[in-house]
Image 1 (tube, rainbow, N blue to C red):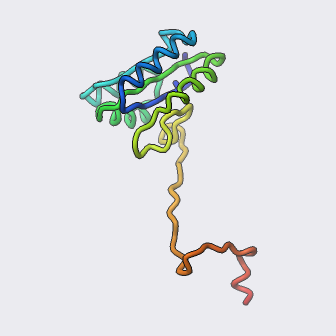
Image 2 (cartoon, rainbow, N blue to C red):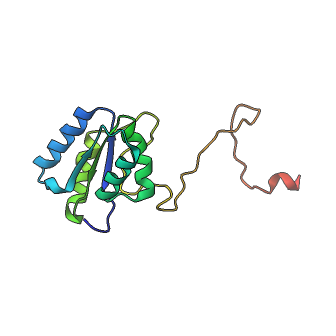
Image 3 (cartoon, helix red, strand yellow):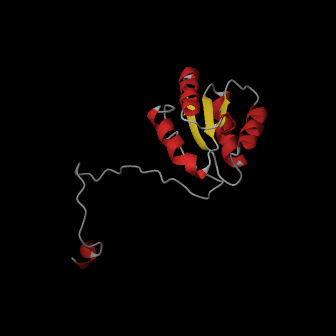
Length: 142
C-alpha cells in the first residue's frame, strides 16, 4: 500500500513468525500484504528487500542488522480498514527481541521521522530518595 509504513514485528523464533503469518491469513489479511524476511546474510540485500516492502531506507538499515543477525521480520502493508485488526493479531503473538523495548510499530522513531527517544538515566541524590520540590526557584530564595 503506497504511502503508509508497514506494521513491523521482529522475532527471534522463525516458527513464531510463521504462526503469526498463518493467523493473519486466516483473518483475511491478503497474502500480498504480508512479507516475511529471514536468514539473509548480505546486509545490502536485506536493506533492498526491506525498502521494497515499504520501509524507509534509514529504518531498513536498522532492521537489516536484526535480520542479518538471525531475526525474522514480518511486515504487514494493510489497508486502513485492516490495520487495526492486523496490529491486534500481531500484538497477541508478542514479538520481541531481547534489549528492544518495542518490536511492533506503526511508526519507527529514528532518522526517517526525526523523532528521538530520550534515554532516562537515574541520577543519585545522595539521600537515596527522590523528593521533588514544589517550586524550582524555592532553593534560590533561602
